[in-house]
Image 1 (cartoon, rainbow over the protein chains, first blue to last red):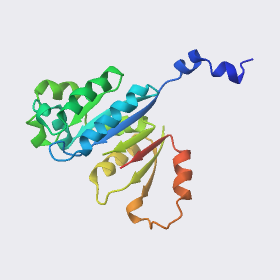
Image 2 (cartoon, each protein chain N blue to C red):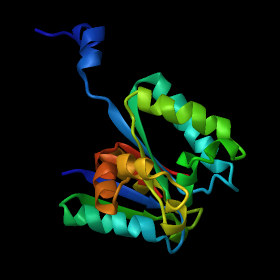
Image 3 (cartoon, each protein chain N blue to C red):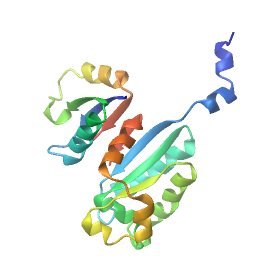
Image 4 (spheres, rainbow over the protein chains, first blue to last red):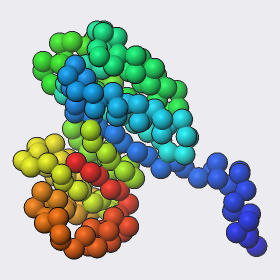
Amino acid sequence: METLSDKLKPHQLEAKPKRKVLIIIDADPRTNPRAAEAVRLAGGVCVWEQVEVSIVLHHAAAHALSEAAADLPEGKIYKQFLPMIREKGGRVYVMPDDQTMEALDTEVILKNHLKEPALAELAAEAAMVIRF
Amino acid sequence: MARIIHILTRENDPLPASIIAAQETTGHETRVIDLTEVDPNGDYSILLEEIFAADSVQVW
């Protein structure tokens, strides 16, 4: 019979699927430091490796993945933390508006674009959705 | 299907409205608490009960 201490063994903990956290960012990284803070927060949580963190850069927030992202006020944060989220198994999606779409590389859009029904399902699968 | 609680913090926000509609269409059970309409001195125990009963907590 499996005891409580058996359940606490490391191999048991690893077998359990990670809970998902979805962070949706609306803030415009060109003018609003909340976008960078949200990315930094997501990066910090994903390093913990207890949850699977994904990000949706919604509308103007998608500028954080533009070619000019390095020149943004908190450009270093995007360069450091967005790859980190991917390395830890999370995804970085974009849902740019028409104006922001023009600032993004076509490959970035093709690889990371998310439509609204898919966002609804992604949110439903997440234990927690937080918006910045 | 997931039991989802949506906590709304912004007035006239189109994004959560469309997400909630899409989740209901696909069969998820949704509950909505609009905090913009709740008095700061209101009874938040109901909100806590809903959070602990939910599979997914979504703060908009």
